[in-house]
Amino acid sequence: MKKVLLTGGYGFLGENIYQLLLDKGFNVFRFRSNQYDLRKYIQVSELFKLEKPDLVINAAARLGGIGDNQSNPVDYFRDNMLIGMNVLENAAIHDVKRVIQIGTVCSYPKMTKVPFIESDIWNGYPEDTNAPYGIAKRALISFSDALKRQYDLKTTNILLANLYGPGDDFRPGTSHVIPALIKKIIDAKEHSRKDLPVWGDGSPTRDFLFVKDAAEAIVKSLDVDISTTNPINIASGKETSIKELVELLILKLKFNGEIDFDTTKPNGQPKRLLSVKLAKDLLNWKSNTIFDTGIDKTIDYYLKNKSKIDSQGSKY
Figure 1 (cartoon, rainbow, N blue to C red):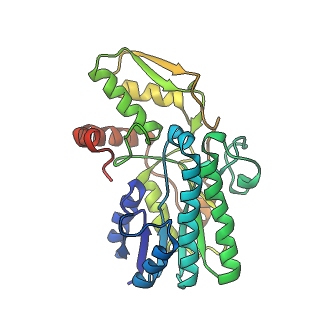
Figure 2 (cartoon, rainbow, N blue to C red):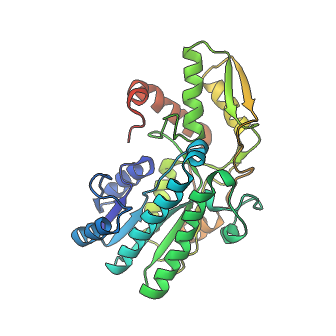
Figure 3 (cartoon, one colour):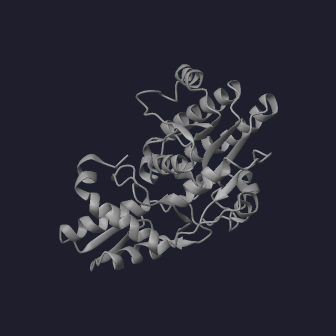
């Protein structure tokens, strides 16, 4: 039985990967950050010596929304670089058979032709508000290529679209747009507020991917012998504007107030729509969750867990 080291295994994405790996019969080791701090090389080295994994899925990262990225750019760059470099280098040194390195759509240049094609990732600078995060993740693609040439480490680099779903982070300081809006709309209803402030002008578009679909693609990639370190988009291949998202949520949550687009706040990247051709060709994978259904499941999760989430933060 192959042993998988899963970093970030208690996170939003990691929890879904973990459950799927167990269902597939893998022997999985996951851990919390107070056991091993992946930013510290010595601790990562000790982790690999003790666990001796055959395969690694590196889902650990510092994550957050636009506001948190703007407030902590150094942390986003440093933490993601250190985590990625320490895990990848130790995988190479300890003869791991394959690493699945999780990257991000934020690595793409701010102005990119739509849909985003993997080879275009190098053709410009990312959107300013999350550039340190995006550049760090992009640099790890180059690092994985260097490790392949020097140590013959096999790495599959996955570029994920904007994830959402049950178990997402609903904390105001770090949440992404879907959980943030769900919580904001429900809070507005509970306090009888008639306006709904939304960052930006509503025009940016996003490619939203249901978290379980992402986990399925990642686990599936363990069994596919991909010879290149070039990245692969994992996305829905469908484009939704923030305005369309807000209108869908207020309809589902029966909010009767007015949307107040705050144009003093940043929009983020203007457009995001990822090509999914390579994922289909190499992994024989596509996203199967209808956006409307995924939103219903996310709302239902929050409503069922609201008191716990509001008092303690995200589930994981």
